[in-house]
Length: 290
Length: 253
Image (cartoon, chains in turn cyan, orange):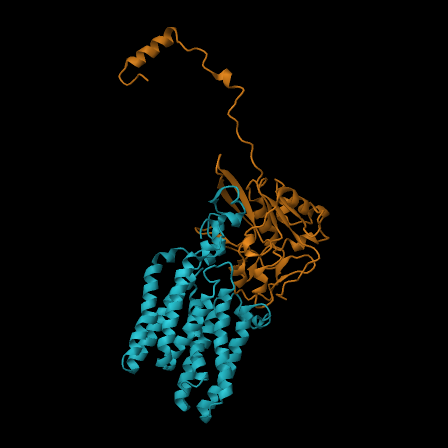
């Protein structure tokens, strides 16, 4: 799949932002006044900024409001509803903390649940696709959720939870990579079933439909980037999980915490790039690729 | 709207005969010609006369080489467009309701006024049947020429999809799969019409007819005896030349 910067930024930052909102919603930390304002501002910048970035890849962003209509079948539509609900509930909860120093606990808990649900709906947009076997697996929502919780805990300064959650996320990430590499082949979809000609013999793509490229190849058949995938996997493991975990284990300092956040974001951006670049769409089979 | 109908009154679709298709791409051209100036936004091209031309097509013809366990390889031309699946994954993922499957005839269409161009339907389609138009920012797909097949302004002979109407080999057939006696249903039954990627559970309406087995070339050739050498021994000038040339070093065989 084409690793579009807008979607990489969207999934990374909205995941972190909603993760932070989750921790704020359950009152960990439970700041008030200006400190609360800063925490909520960071969370909203990430969550809303991510959502806005995702509209950049739309052909007609001015019609985005229509995306709320099909919640019965579409995960993208459900994500639109849940994310707006989470942001609205958390704005009321946050206002209580900032202006009145008052935590409305039930509101915070509802907001926290909606924030996690938002990340779950985002992950289901990818998980539901049978056409991309690498994503069509429980490890996709597990990774998105554990990352959001772990990254959110890191931003919220909840070291006690960030350490185990980031370790869990790292484990899920390794599982996703290791099982994901063979899943396409494991599903039994190949050029033979794609063309229906597999029963006659060995099928080889002889000639593509056009000499030039097209939307399908640009969007779904991304092969160039996979060459460096091993190096990038190591880099994203080190930056996204290893370094933050190490820095969190040192005696607390704001510089170390800041470094941990920067390293985490950089590592997750790299792994999200891989998430798209390494994902093989079955349509590539028609072009003799995988 | 993006809930799929449980059943459709008719199931309009295509049968594509891989035995007959000659790979001339006439269906590609007629499809682009008709659909760029009728239903919805035009099918744009980018850099059409430049170094890297690219454009939106609703129908593309691939070519595959199939090597059987024995015998020679076969070249098979393979037209591919929307299969108007009964369980169309492209429809249910659409967040705006722009994508829908018609209850009356099963055609899968895009209402371009509602399309936000998110591309998720194209991600969900295993067949590459949907292409986001780079100029218009909306999703384009085969409409089964919905603006031809019911068009009473056209002569009756033209009320079928442009690709079917134009195919010079008769490799494309249009009809109602819900009617077991229709031409397309009979062709599918007689020739073992197949689904593409059936394991993905999309239940495509369009069917592909596999190439028929070819006759095997036989070793016995009734003309072979007449081609046997007539003169085993040469005489005269030819015999001298043969001997002379054989005498040259490296000349003998």
